[in-house]
Length: 189
Image (tube, rainbow, N blue to C red):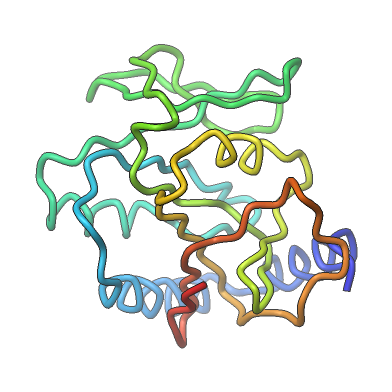
C-alpha cells in the first residue's frame, strides 16, 4: 500500500473511534508502554496530540516517564513552516504555547535542545508497517529532525491499530521507529 492511501484510510479509521473506544485503547496502550524496557532517558521529545484527529494522548506516557525518572526533561516541537524544519524546546512550567498554522500547540519561548541531546522521541503517526516505517501527515518534519539525532535515539510511535503490510513507497529519507505501542502489543524494530 502507498503512504497516501494508508494516510487517508487510517485517519478515517481513527476518526471513527468513539470516545469510549479511545479511552479503552489509551488505557491498554499505557499498559503496553509500561512494559517497555528503556535505558536511562534524560531528554524526552514529546508533542501535543491533535485531539480533533483522535491522536493518542501521549501525556499518559509522559507522566509514566516522569514517575520513573523524576529528573527527566521534556522538550516540545517548534516548527519553522517556511524552512520545513523543527527544533526541540524545553519550556518552563509557566511557559506559553500557541497553535501554529497546522493547529498544533507549540512553545512560544524556551531553551533549545540540540538533536544529539535527545534520548527518546514520541513520534506522531497515522499508521505504521511491520518494518517500523510510519505514515505521518506527509510534511516530513519528524523524518528530517530524526535524521539529525544520534543513531541510538529511542523512537516510539503509538497506534490504535496494528501494523500494516510493508509500505511500498519507503525512501531513503524515511526513518523507522524503534518501537510502536498498540492496545494489544509492543512492536520492536
